[in-house]
Image (cartoon, one colour):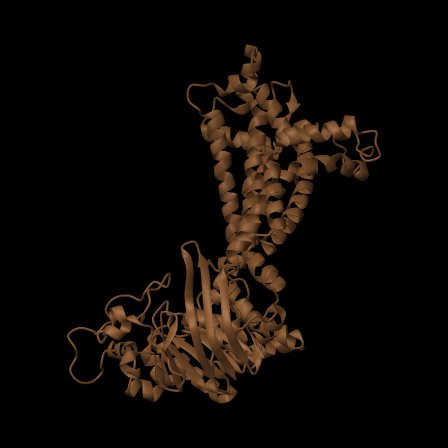
Length: 323
Length: 316
């Protein structure tokens, strides 16, 4: 088990190295384009171009360029945005990380809890009107675009009904640091959490229900019945337990992608300066150093989430441990 | 102790009603081993699942009577059935590879059943699991209890399933082809084990198989099933010496002889069992039967005696 764990972590480092290599090659070694010109941005003066060339070592071989780049991102952290005239990229990205993490983690708690409840209840009452209602609600949740839902909630809680007792507690849009104002942090994030999690509650609830119903067909469920166990125990300890693999897989992928910037729409709608928003802005004015850093950051998060999922697999499925 | 009268299990399907079990009656005495033989689809498993109350298909219709020690099981509330199941009536399944939940250790799974029926501590239940594993001849039971199903061979898993079934000293054990999925050598070990356990626990056993060789080894009395009905019953000796129903004869003929001249071909039964949807009138075996005559277009009755066969050649 320990060996498998170390092996998995080693793999993770290797994959991350590969990704950083690939990202570097895409940005710096694409034939027919001068990376210095792209980093310097539009209408750059020859002096700026020259400074970029020197700073990124474009007159040197690729491996030196790669190492210089990695040093700038991970060690010295002095990667500079030329488009935004001297803006330090690494601290800028690091500033957005807590925002995105707060948003995604809170939403993840909501969606795990509620989708578990929905999936279990629907599977337990499969075929009944409760099951059907829950599944339709889930489908509605999946179908609502997050930007539309966010704007609707904003409309209700920020303007239309803001002055009623129901929504007067909702603070104005924006992010408050947890360390400065925990209550404010919580209150500003409640509506974004709900907005972001609804899609996943619907999706995960439906997936979990399907997985449970499928495991209920397995031979070992019949064995469990033959043992004289209660239906609740069969459902929770046998069927649900073996269904969690699909759930955890999905969760790892979605969580990684969201932390890596896929929560962009929610961030924009609620004025949260997160990783997604930062990437989006950088894309608009072609700020190559920022794009590169956020891409690296995002891919690292996806890889890390996948490693965590694999480790979770080892915990929930003994068959994976020895493999 | 177990009296089954006119048990019928039908399934509603889109094509119509399929009578998987049709008017089956049998009895099992205390400590007795009843063997049930028949081809795949003859209704042997379904009728025993009905006894266990394990037919969960909402499209199934169960009719007739199943009495266990004077208690009617058909229509019994699921809570009351649950108390019996696993405790007084236990079941061993055909495929040990899929019969155990993959994510729990085998010791945990045995202890779970003990805890479901007895008021004892977890530690005591675990100890009981280890004792049971020892009883079914699993080497190093303390270690084996910590193993997951995928870490054990098929024979070992079947022993675990048997240990689980025995965990509450059931009065009746239903074994659904417990040796079919195993190697021949392992089969013999499992049969020996069942023999031993039967002596030690005194449980009555209903043993389902399609293997006449296995039957010859263990059964006291036998039922032969075909197309959802019992076609012959009697003691093992009677059935093997003087099979009355042509189907039983054909089953015995299809075993290759160990001594004497080898037949050029194995004597298989021609044709396939009938589809149970809209079964035609008359004897269901008639289309495959070498001895059929004009009377076979009517439905033969199985007599009421201990020794009976549903065939006009016999009753005529």
